[in-house]
Image 1 (cartoon, rainbow, N blue to C red):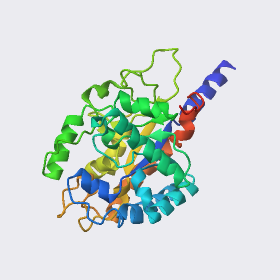
Image 2 (image 1 turned 90 degrees about the vertical axis):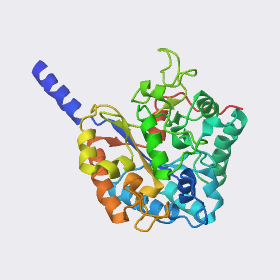
Image 3 (image 1 turned 60 degrees about the vertical axis):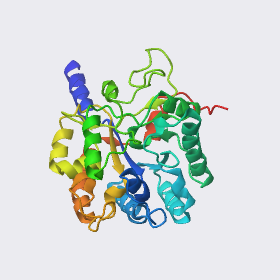
Length: 333
């Protein structure tokens, strides 16, 4: 009997799949161009991220038979066609989450009242559009601090997904400036160096130092779900990493992760937009962020990685998984 129990335990361990969350930041082309200091032009209304990227993601997730999370920028819902697309995403069973109202890169530079308006206005716009009430938030550019989490916590959200536990922030900021061919002092992104000390798995963040867990025994009402990173240097697990390293290399690095740890793979709307013709810059750039790749090239790189994740993890919506571990939602007055 004891030997049989040991065999059953081994089988149970082998069958266990940790949760994985596939999330898409729906950064419209206007926000991407704005991020790199380029003129927005007519890209707010004529936006391939919403016209092509969202349809491609819906088709891809349908083929994989998974449900993902879509983090919406509130201002986009002013456009009727984008609002209809967002409703289609929700009707397909995907999570709708909050990604601020104007996608300001440097949210923590705002005074608290303005910061609060950015988050609350996005929430209200999502609800007024007839979409499910969001319970998850991600700050643009991973720019998060204790004030951001205090606002999100007070709104009764179940989780934040802004912390990037990586030491590569300074390197990524240099790379960002190189891509943009300019230094933008008003930007604040890729987290803070101290966040490398944050847990790599979902945790209840300390109210005064968000890279620390709450003390044991203290009840948690809102969870932090950090963006996953790749060993050994902590490169964020994003489509940009896939385009830069190649799918085979990313799968190899994923296999080196602790197999029982939850995973959050972050994608962006532009990741499934054809960039054969330049749409962000006025010229074809290097393969950084995939800004020079065709839709077919992007699909060919992304699909193997997503299929690997689907094979080795249990794909879940973060809103469902997190709420099993948090206190009942109570919105502050």
